[in-house]
Length: 355
Image (cartoon, rainbow, N blue to C red):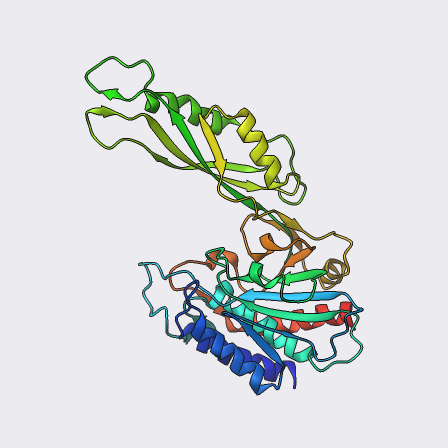
């Protein structure tokens, strides 16, 4: 089949995905559409929960393995939509619909690319594709659950909208729950240990705090207090204030190191990470995938947004059609020519690396 034939089929598949609700952990029906693609192209595939995956026909365990991954779950549509989020609408070269840009365009482009190479013999890399679930919720039954099931992955391309430029690094994420303690009391009585007033200095500390190590690709670690909660009655001074701190981690630190630093230095009564598993990720600039992409005229950058790269321990490249700024927006869309270009560039990139 030609890239153009694959492109036409990929756009049709994306329209089907848009018109099928697939909120995180509810992707069973979109998985059926993806299965139908593999059946139509006579590709031997497997389904594990709502993850649909396949190996190239001439898989050779002695060769390294390249993972192609993107997700078919979506967030829920926001209230600002003016178009039906579950209707695939084409207007002026744009395909509108929930999940069109994040990450349906990437997913169908990678599926088409995998299909293009599926029957090719003597590849330098094995290919494994995973159309994964629960990316938007970082759920337990997404790509992370597939890593013990699929063959060991040596390098990965994760499909997210990057305008087909090369995101060679991605920030990790640690969310902390912190407590600032004080003495509970009646509001009418003196209290020199008011937890809310104690929080003023704590918030200033977080506002001023800087992690020392920067990153060429990802810049500085970004720490943001995102939630403050305290009190239940107007006449009661609460005994504690609860804070939530969002930390976007560069590749100069592990998540465990970030937690160790904040637990040792922050002026909170207690501070605990919810999880340490969403680490930063990167790929060496001298990797064949990066060199091939640069030779094709694509630019490189570090991404501040989180993806399924965070659950991978191998080098990984984030790359896909569409624009990250459209993700989770009202009247989400992707240009049809972005999908066509995405498939062409994916195929050309892999030709330079795996043939």
